[in-house]
Image (cartoon, rainbow, N blue to C red; front, side):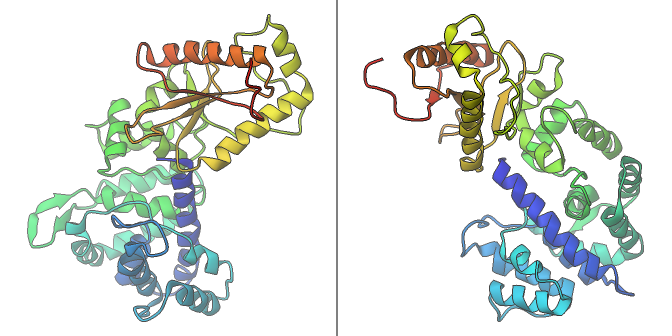
Length: 368
């Protein structure tokens, strides 16, 4: 996962909530409309680019189900304009045109889940509305407890093969939650890995939910979209000596100190500690954050390993890249960066072959 993916998830949340606000204001909401609203969370294997297949196969039909219309003969741009005009909400244009959806829901259940919604409509509609209006953990927990009482979802033509209802419902409620605080709990490998690391993989849904939401406020995790990024780095976020957290945007206007690392007794840090240099350091870090949204970016949290940026799985081999940011091209700063990188890498990865880089404000002189 990455910050770009997390933003796509939040974008989907904004789109779904706009449409749900219109939908739930109606006197009658059908099973087909709930089905369409839920489908907005779905993607296919082709989910990027202007010609992404999910747009015509999944997103457009979902919008049609919600609005009770057939959009099969229109482009996405046309549909966005039509819906915005009908609902009197111009903000929907960009929300609809932007990429949405984040879960590749099981194909074998994509049709049969509609019949399941029909069969459980009287329970599901209040549940969807509760998710849309939820404001506290107590309210969300009540939703979770209701989910546990719902029957499993049968597979098309194989009613004996069942899927847990939360695999379908938690992505929908993730989309509807006002603060994006309803976590995804489905069969995704990343989610299952997270549950294992929390020691709740074999526990009930309520325990899984409670374990996941306890992570909010830890290591830069603000909401369920951030939580979906954590993956195998979870242990580094949980311990009292946590070494990592999600990379945060740095202030480029305040006069606060940069965190001192292991160079306090060196003259170069004195120069780097001036306000202009601190601001430049933060500007460089922010540019990395903005430019590399396709990746999950972490930063050091423990004083023994205060690295600047770690890019998760930056290459085709799934390797991480550790970056030290310096605000000066002076030789002492660059030598210091190299030493820091090797020290941080060893702390994080031991004897594994290092993947290191130094980010500078300009090209250094040839001779250091």
